Length: 446
Image (cartoon, rainbow, N blue to C red; front, side, top):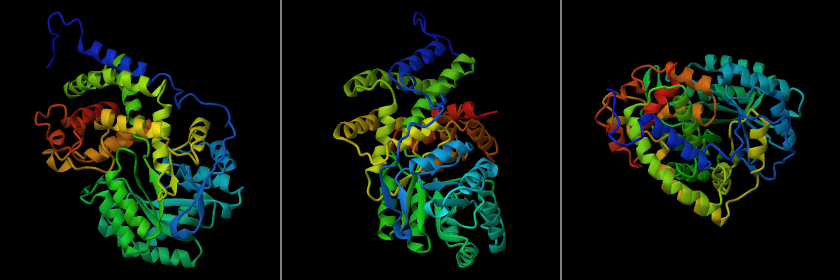
């Protein structure tokens, strides 16, 4: 249905989007900052300032770790190690194994004992046999050019049942005896949508089940200043078992910045903006107007302060051992290493509280999925919004689009014509879920 402008309004839907995005840019959500795409030639010489004991592993890890999900630049990894980063998180499928290959080329020239290296295996829904697990792991070692890893994790563990998958634990026992694995762990993003169908178990149930199981030494999960309710519960449970705690997706601020960039791209390309997203933008314009006072109040000329404060929030928790943002450029490296050893001051604490109250409802919480059961079409909200996060916040555009377009079952293309807004009614945080899903579909569709 084509919408007409109200008589005398003087503003079309396209102009409204443009003006709203421009206002956001003026407030610093796009402008006034150096984008990660603007590469610098070499690092500035920042150094890691704090190391923390990684739970019962006893290893002192840098408070800023290197998330290698998008790592392809050997020079960036070399610089990271020179700066003092000694915790590296990768996985067999990151860049189709090329993340591990990049790491292997660099670590082959380094003192391996000074680096804590974690890789991960995604066992899917079935779990796999001990033999297959060991075979896949041997290929990880080949790519990493090392004879052992410090930690082998279950990647994106889908169910509480898989936490106790005995073939995996048998493989771990044998690999430890062979000197190829020192510790084991798991990671979780929240509910997943796999080829075998949706997964019902939530992040806290899975990670806390691992803590109670007693055989897992290290965990990786989602935690940030907006998505902290579930995270605090997990932190408490893992701390009680002296587990190593590493974090991902610690900066929800980047989500907003990416959303604005994508809106601007859609506008310049003349792409149609869905009715539900336009409705959301009408609400968002009100927040933009309020944002002027927010930016002036805290003297913010760009988004760096909010981003840095988001990381400091996590670093300020003594139960957290390493924050692992994804890095593949010198600028990203400088940005995050500079935050090592820092804490929030009172002004930043107040700023984050204001940010959460003002813009928090536009962040679809990672690992939440409380609305999914209400959707009559079975749209995997958590999975789709995670892929959108990869695109908008982490700039992993190709990867995000490939993952989204490989999703089985219903995607978010059904959301634009949904008149029920079931997900929004079910959301306890008043997130405009339907509008965000429409935007995600438009962004991620090939």
